[in-house]
Image (tube, rainbow, N blue to C red):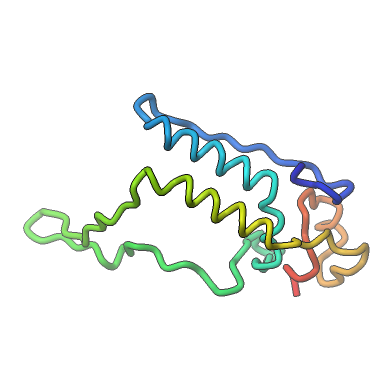
Length: 140
């Protein structure tokens, strides 16, 4: 269903591995989150810009700052010193995150694939090999 309304776009595959001691609620959350992205993730494409030269997708607001950078890590007397980030959400919050995601997807109409010839700044070879949805807004 990822290519709903987008003829010629082939759905991709995803592989997720779980360890044997994962909490059942976390397992259910990850499975449902992957399903949500597979079904409705395309609705968020207008928020991203695609660089066809490097094959990279970037959010229009720029990259998210990681909680830890390599520059934050140092060694003193043979010991690694790095900031500790112990802030974690409760497993009880996971259903709320899924509801927020569903509401976000429902609020977004998404964007259909670019019209033939509309992506004038990508090569014909690129277009022949492209298998994914690429709205015009993503390469503007």
